[in-house]
Picture 1 (tube, rainbow, N blue to C red):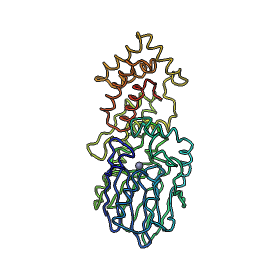
Picture 2 (cartoon, rainbow, N blue to C red; picture 1 turned 120 degrees about the vertical axis):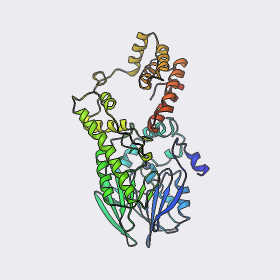
Picture 3 (cartoon, protein in one colour; picture 1 turned 90 degrees about the vertical axis):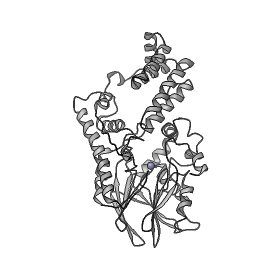
Picture 4 (tube, rainbow, N blue to C red; picture 1 turned 180 degrees about the vertical axis):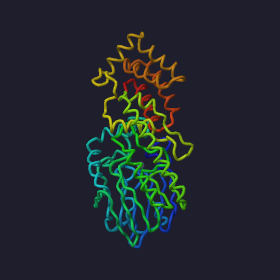
Length: 416
Ligand SMILES: [Zn+2]
């Protein structure tokens, strides 16, 4: 891992080392923070994704140790900054502009990011760095990283598209999964499957609490279709490739299908059982639990996947009557604090509870900070509670949101 790459962005728990391997004839998988696949053909490279702008120069340099072909065509698997925003790094000096292909929904995504740039800075600071202010001084938020990329798509497609470059065929398939603009690519001539972030070597990122709707049921359908290719090389959007092992690829893809289907069905069953408050639904579901290292809730959480199912089928209201048109948080917290004898009492009870019941402890911690954000004793206790929770939770999204909560408490301000 080069020093400049790590300096650019501290992403807790992400492996940002770079490895380039020839996974099939003239086909290179660049494994880093996010992955790039390069198919060398007689007409030039077909490149799948670009990696993060901060890491792309290093990934491109490693790839260029293996091939000096120009980029003929680039395919963006979805419009996230770690996949679609650094094509320039891979282009040779003076080469023809490449064809860039993406699903047609990507245009709206780029427009939306441009409209919500500051929002995205904050939520991505929370999600990736455990610090809401992390993105403000960060290279990721410079230029148009969250709007349109420097090399936007030149060819848009809707459902499926087959292209041939240098005599090699690529089948592009649209799917809604983590995003509504996802493409997975199958190259039958080399029997290589590029899944984009439909496979990330962990529990699918189908829940993310701060982002727009995800589609775990359609995601499962796409994984089924991918399994039907019987590919013997799988190049995922994140994590290591699987090479020359069709049985293992099928096993993993269908395991992800089972995982998602189980959560979707359990959530719908609870929704249909009298439309209870959302919090009751996610607490009552028995979430699937796997021993497999590639199916752990390292990044997203199964509880959040259930939330996405609820959101899609059931709207935004929590189901708790007072939260339909709620009081200001501070007003409620001040009322509760006064009833129990002060915000410090709430904060100290939160600290007492954190070993036995972190969930309960955090509710009290929130009320304490919301009632008295500038009280240093309260801030310290709340920070302790959230640091403890951040350290013990499985998934990175929760860990970093809780770490952000501790930051707010230390700064003497409510979470916002
Ligand atoms: Zn990604």
